[in-house]
Image 1: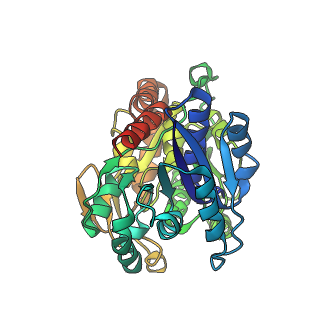
Image 2 (image 1 turned 120 degrees about the vertical axis):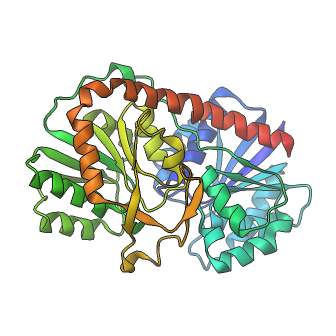
Image 3 (image 1 turned 30 degrees about the vertical axis):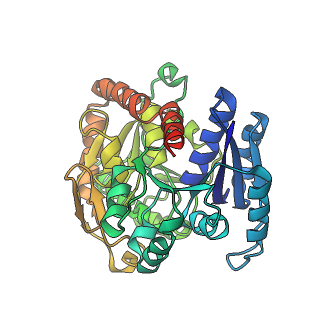
Length: 391
């Protein structure tokens, strides 16, 4: 049986890390044509949440214990791990993991190194583009997690090796149809994310304030996740008089439990290359409202499996350094500057969804089918293995 070594920078909380560990757990549980091994350069909170399930299913995992970004001694441990496992394919995720994997292991032509692109940083920043150009000769293939990601990379880099768009796999819950209906009031909005500038959660607070000003004071917002902007967001909620209407739940090991407690899921990021949490919410049959950009514009069929809101608001000057200079809109099939969701437009879309929530049952069913048919974990694992076969 051929072997695949999966390399991650860390097993800290993140969409990429969660996706990788969940897919490897599925491979271990259901069987695979390949033997899979996980190697993480650093540890993190997923060691206590998702890794135990992977190990219980018979999956293999090594944590190299890299102490800091300046600690390069882990490269010796990475080489020893590869010598022990003797992988036929090395599947690297994150810019850091794909960088050091190709530097440390790319000299062996028998090992095919596959770079998984779940973001656009390496294509957007000049120094990373120089690094990628230098390492193209050590790259056997690319996987992009969305058409938006592929377009951004191919706009900036001339790639000649094999490449595929393989959308992330979304685990499908079995109990979504048996959920108790929610009361119409309070009307609960939910978002699950790392609280960082690119998520534009301020837009959701301002939309909530607009709804309260219009008399819909029973609308609530639940924010699941943690991050560098949490304190600033809590202050903004207080200044808008929304302290009692917004609940900051912090990090949760199983955020999907909140799906049964909310009416509408919100995604208002300036850019998302896929959005695993949006896919999970749709898979659980939630009504989802997202900005028309990147991954969400590919996942949601506007008006059928969810709602897309046009992005029209300029990015604040304070955030321009942390937001990509260009993003991709799959609906328009075009590149454009990063823009945010207009809070008034978001408030009106929320009010519209609330006004006919009972009539949106077909949309909830369509959202489930959309994820099951196009973005399931099974389809992801099958597509990944087919690409391995080609390599």
